View 1 (tube, helix red, strand yellow):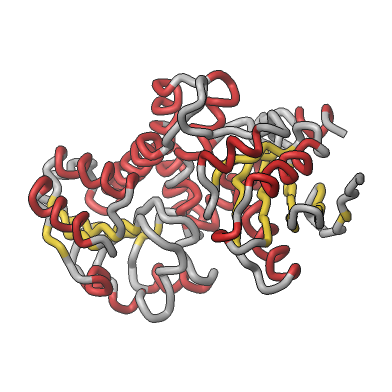
View 2 (view 1 turned 180 degrees about the vertical axis):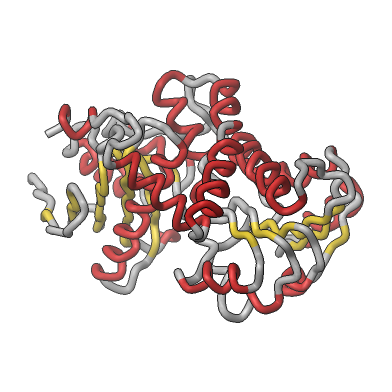
Length: 358
């Protein structure tokens, strides 16, 4: 039986497809926002969305975000994303095989990778039916765990931000409050300690807090109290939407720089931070090390090249802050402008993929 995807017409998006394979229970959407800079790349997210419309809203938001993230990072990827409407506890290999067939229908225009509730073993199943999948740990030539590259880029963003708020990139005796000590958060914490910074940390895992206290000399803080730590920089490295009308009034920091995705609950929260005199580093510029890592794999993986490219996040942040002051705009607005300029080709980025792939 041949399964034909349904094309959903969405203004501002190159292609959005809904696909069902009832024989295995696959219901999925792939959204391609832009291929102006290269093939659209973005992860596969598995969630039990209550409706098809809810899944569509999520995949559209994420696909556009990937376009902007890749554009600001200066890499040759466009923006795309995919979602599978499924309870993650009910994942089966057949579903990922069928999803790979769905990806193949786009002939390389969309490249899949890992996202929420998707593991490397799941990607291995996708790879059985398509070659358009990257970031599978343990596979020869894979970029593997992106944490070191994401952490490196975040550290460079912290350097640029310290120069803005303190006039120097020196971390000695500076205070940082880190929310989340996962792979990336822990790597950032280690870098900061090596530079002489003082740390306050929180995490849902008590063993991570004990480890931070014993190995890094950090001070552990219960959950929500991390927002109230008086510090130079608040570093969110866990869940999104943590900068909102409830938490922003509690912050006692000079800047927010972290690797968590979608830190602002709403666009208005960027203005709330500005009104409190808190410098906000746009998260999609700060945390682009992950997609940089995948792009270097696409070209032929070399971690040293990925780390070198992540170092350029420092220059990106300096450009964002400089233009924000000159144009009297929020840094997040400038980051969006930079992405839109590059997507439109005004910064010399070739529009190769959209011309080559039909």
